[in-house]
Length: 346
Ligand code: ATP
Ligand code: LTN
Image 1 (cartoon, protein in one colour):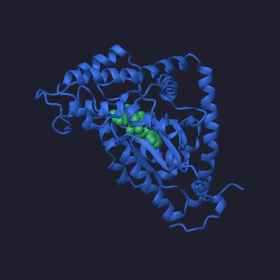
Image 2 (cartoon, helix red, strand yellow):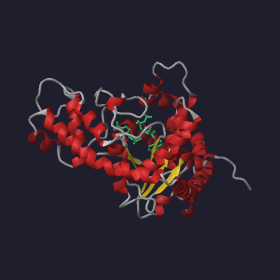
Image 3 (cartoon, helix red, strand yellow):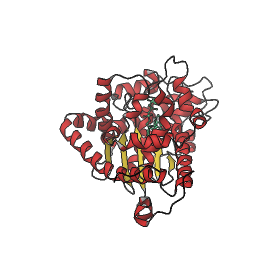
């Protein structure tokens, strides 16, 4: 075990000098953005820009963990970045960048793999779900949480806004940071997950026991961020509910209806109680929900179209973002390499 060393003030994690908390989050460019990404993640990202120093990342290296097509990955990376901006991320206030443009992510991931145990990785639910029934599983799917820990720790992150499905990965990141700091001296800020109050886990509208997801969901069960109003309305109208006809929030017994109620609460800001007491039938609830979703998603769709019409501007923003991100990441990586015992170059 390495000898503990005290850091001079200049070397301490940046949080010790900061008055504003730092936020980091990421989305994979692995498919079309959907309502779960929007309500579970993006809306929090946008709200947090008001108060915090935010870093939002298209985590393209994570998309290499499952089968992929290179040309499609490049296209999705641009589309996902446009999706962040369309959802309201403001590049004047937040730093927006692509993970592979900042090489420190992959490098710190190796140090994280050397901090996290095989047993810990084996317990990750996402690994179990994504590897189930597959004949060929990439090694990176297994070590993925080490890369995610690296993403977060590189920026001395205090808060990580994510959907419920990522909670376990953030816990592992915290454990890794605490272990590293304990073994090698104070190096990383220990981050916290921030979950949306409602809709932290948006379910598939056709199979309400499954999470709405880019890669796994049914097309009719997934509302895409860019779905036109008619598609949104139709998908909500056809959402699977149950036959007892009572408007009641009960995720165990009435998963389909409870999902719709949660969506309504998330998109309108009304409480679950207020919603359940104002409807006695499913039809009107679905109609109002469709209308509220269309109103929320319409401006996003329009901004997206404008952004995709100006690829040079988007490329410029990503380049600027990567430069700023690298400035911070390189310092944290140097600190971590030195702490773990790697000889600094002379
Ligand atoms: P994939 O299916 O490829 O794993 P995904 O749809 O789960 O993709 P991610 O890129 O993994 O999306 O997640 C981006 C962000 O959106 C994360 O913060 C994640 O927690 C959140 N998120 C994803 N799906 C949902 C959902 N159904 N409900 C709430 N939040 C979600
Ligand atoms: N693993 C996440 C995406 C992700 C992320 C991150 C989220 C990669 N790195 C860092 C927050 C912080 C997912 O699959 N949703």
